[in-house]
Amino acid sequence: MTQPKKRKENGFGEDHSRKAYKGIRRMLYYKELVPGQKVSCRSVAKKLGMSVTPVIQALKLMEFQGLVGHEANHGYFMTPFSIAEVAEIYEMRQLLEPSLVPAVVEAIDAEGKEILKNTLEAHVSAGKEEMFFQDRLFKNVEFHLALASLSKMETQIRILRQLYNLLFLKYGGNYLPVAFTRSLDGEHQKIYDAVCAKDVSAAQTALGTHIANVKESVLKSAARMSENVDVPEF
Image 1 (tube, rainbow, N blue to C red):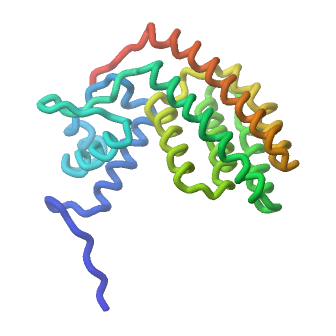
Image 2: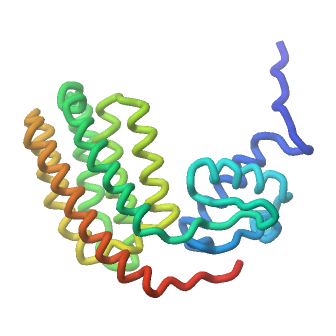
Image 3: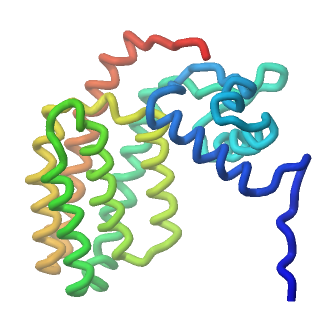
């Protein structure tokens, strides 16, 4: 039996939109698009080597995800830098991540401990020099998502992934001081030890304190950076 062909719109199949989506995410990662910047669909399409149509389709999805904005007759733009949004994201993390701990502790086994240990060690071994800062940030994300994934609470995990998308694709994590990230290893270790000991209370306290510490540092740094935001043209 022959497989049905993928539905196409305006001559472009799903693969083109997916390629555009991944390409724009890479542009966000490398700061080729920054908060407040107008997005030229034609320029993005030219850079990605494709038509404008799949780029627009990808931007529509990113609008739904909160990564870009859109105004009639004005097109797409990167939503402006917002300290309030950053604070809200961390407040959501403070509510969500500790709430998953009981399920993590109940479900964790030898394999789960090994997965969590590997992400912990990856963060520790990530380069601590400023040139490796972005890699260290993503190793941090991997630790938190690995911990959350052990809960098997798929809906909450999807929400958490979206929060991290906003933090590290939209804002890039540049507001987190390099020196501060070096204190995260010890905090991660406390979380790991408590989870492996199946101590729900200690794990929730360690995780909640960790997120609160990061939030405080982030908001102070973000407040300083927001005073000197330079929005380039695209």
